Length: 153
Ligand code: IDP
Ligand code: MG
Image (cartoon, rainbow, N blue to C red; front, side, top):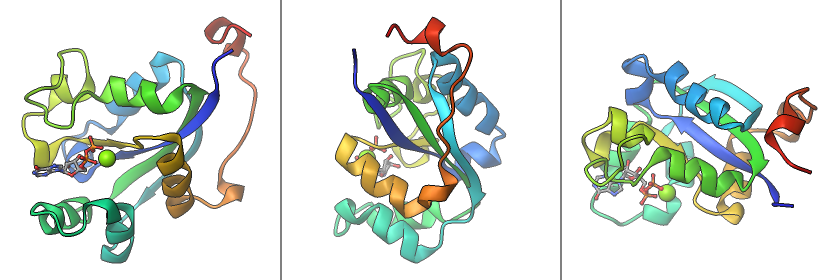
């Protein structure tokens, strides 16, 4: 059986401003992933710098901090088998120019600096990122009646 994972998703400010939050979350939900955490928040500069610490010093770092703090975002934790990789493949490539049609970025975005969605890139970064946005008590474990039709166990 595949490893059950949790991963952090952000609907970035452009997704919120463009009214695409529901569409983006719906694609992940329809894939079969389960929402186990969800909140609307405004990311401040300190949180943005921690979340994107791996990119500090790169040319796009400051514009990236400005972008992610420019408007409220939705933070969500999705759970499922191989959730990290499944979210990444559903998002599409970082640069929407290279993102395949059918992916979120490939269907709704044009530029790397306005690419709509964040998804953790590994189980380790997922654990760190989830802890930045959610306390343990804000994450819920619950069965869905449909789980056995989505996950072969
Ligand atoms: P990811 O979001 O697909 O994991 P990362 O390489 O982790 O991509 O970069 C984080 C975010 O930084 C990207 O989603 C994008 O918003 C922004 N970014 C990455 N590379 C560039 C760039 O070359 N120019 C402008 N923005 C970039
Ligand atoms: Mg990344």
